[in-house]
Amino acid sequence: MNFYDPLETRDPVEREAHLTDRLARQVAHAKQHSPHYAQLLADVNATECASRAALSRLPLTRKRDLIELQKARPPFGGLNAVAPTRAKRVFASPGPIYELQGQETDHWRMARALYAAGFRHGDLVHNCFSYHFTPGAFIFEGGARKLGCSVFPGGTGQTEQQIQAMVDLRPAGYVGTPSFLRILVERAEEMGADISSLNKACVSGEALPGVVRQWLGERGIAVRQCYATAEIGVIAYESVPDAGLVVEEDVLVEIVRPGTGDPVADGEVGEVVVTTFNADYPLIRFATGDLSATMPGLSPCGRTNVRLRGWMGRADQTTKVKGMFVHPEQIAEIARRHPQVAKMRLVVDNPDAQDRMTLCCELGEHDAALAETLVNSLRELTKMRGGIEFFAPGGLPNDGKVIEDKRVY
Image 1 (cartoon, one colour):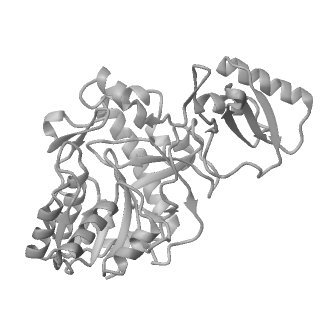
Image 2 (image 1 turned 60 degrees about the vertical axis):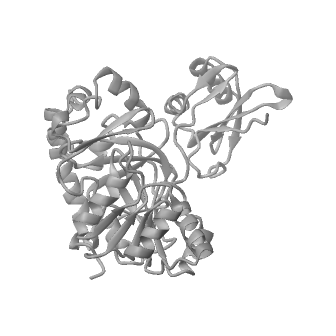
Image 3 (image 1 turned 45 degrees about the vertical axis):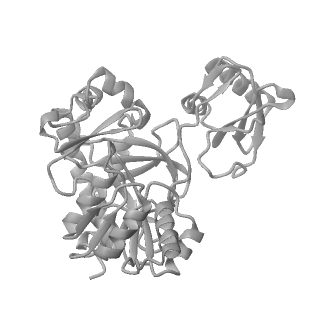
């Protein structure tokens, strides 16, 4: 069987109808059981949240705000819909940001991604994600157990001991970062250790360079990558090398313009925003802070869900100019005031060692009056002076940047 379940090959229209039907029920559940969403969505009629258009009108919950939310309402900022005592485990990511694990085996929905990477019932999986503080190792272990795999909890570091365990136990697959897998394979070759049982890997946590994939492939290890976060779990996963990441069936993904909650056109780079259907931790429009874009067409593997191009940078492009912070939200407000401008980006440079701001605007036709109005809006919202530069439609790069820092120090 090439697919984890029939959901992966559904007609996209059927999938969308199913997701939006679940959305209304999830919003109602979150309002009823999560203190954060009871407050944030107090004026929202859950029964009307049955479309992407309705979803796009809901406020975002940003990852970068979790630290302050959790300080104000410990330990989970009120985003949890179950009592902290009901959590199977509690984790701490840098920040600190605390996350909970529910009682189900595959809380983060990793089984589908592992299946697409070739993992099957009965495989022994060598897990080299950290079992300390953060949930990374447990995210992958839960998916492996759901598939019926055994797991060796290797954790991080201790290269030679890891290799010895591989020699003795003959695992079929590896999960961890791609860089550590290469370190293990290189060291095993130096030691003359036989770890040829490894024939597949599902990697995450960092970029997978093409040269690393090829190098590992030449040694018989087929590598696939997945995109996951501690709060959400799996967002998208790779089934075919270099063909994008297929969105997971149990999440609803939007790509929005950084600094706003406004969805961008298909193919345009923006911030990844995810709504989950997790009953214990019901994240609604959770802004990850990551940049990506959708890809046209369907995956060559036959899965019919939307594909993402992968991680393309960070959406939070806040920078400091002349000692004052400038945020993407401020540029978004300028764009709202001037809807005739198709796209904006603030470029910061420092000729003659002096910070300078230039608001770059895509616009077909313009005049001096509009330029002056834009200058005034920039000054009003940032409290600093800046210039204006106009570009023809399509003249600005499609890279998701709202603020570009080009200063040289």
